[in-house]
Length: 311
Ligand SMILES: Nc1nc2c(ncn2[C@@H]2O[C@H](COP(=O)(O)OP(=O)(O)OP(=O)(O)O)[C@@H](O)[C@H]2O)c(=O)[nH]1
Ligand SMILES: [Mg+2]
Ligand SMILES: [Zn+2]
Image 1: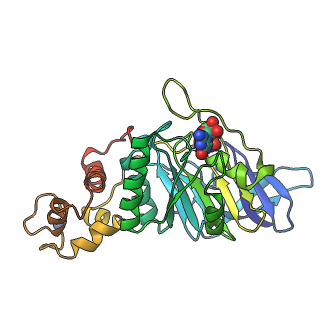
Image 2: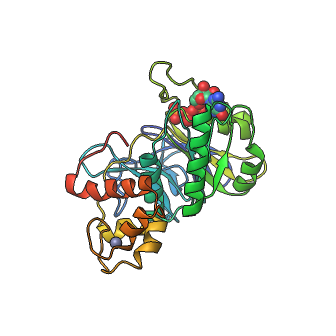
């Protein structure tokens, strides 16, 4: 049988078969995906083949169709393993909040760079617009301008009040969209607004720390009433190390890449080289310092080879 993985838990995978029924499946211990060392060999959004030995017996996934794309997070340890957040998606909505919880530009940029590496389009959603101080609103304005200039679509939203939902709904129409962002930014709240039957659990962020409570523990795909699907996942913590060559890192920062064509040296790392167009642009304010700092943080991963918990 063939179907779409719509939910994953620690050792179970729910597959919606082509006939529409959801079947709980397992995978055999020796199941390995060629080429990717991930902690989860099968992810929500995967198309799979599965079979059952007998009518009552457990169903097992035997094969995964080739993925169109996927979004991956490096695991938070040194084992070089990764966690696939979802497969075969059209777009990621990266939910970002200025406070309660705070999303850093380093986290945003590391997420964006990773998505660029896997050729998955990302839109940035500034959520909790109803709950902003004046200075936080100014920060949204500055960040929105920054990321739109780089080339990312940005939206403002209050998932709680529904303000901004309509324009977002157009983006989601007939597409498979992954909701990503730190714990507590409002992913499940947005899901519940768009798919009321989802009844996803939400929880207030910690008063003491302003951080999310890791409320969503499973990844799950929900059909949108008007066509398309949303994937709700547990909050994304930091991104572990990227093991990329400096030239490669440049590719995943679109504005730095564009400017780097004018660097004197083809293999310029934009750190110290004479005739570096990126350093020149940084000085003139044509590249944002926060973006350049994030670029350096990814370059630094290679040397340090360690997990950066703060991101
Ligand atoms: N004021 C305000 N609160 C919001 C908004 N969106 C979500 N919240 C609140 O933020 C808290 C966290 O929301 P969730 O939807 O559980 O967050 P999540 O991103 O799913 O978190 P995890 O499942 O832990 O990853 C809840 O108390 C929500 O009511 C918003 O637009 N405005
Ligand atoms: Mg949630
Ligand atoms: Zn350069």
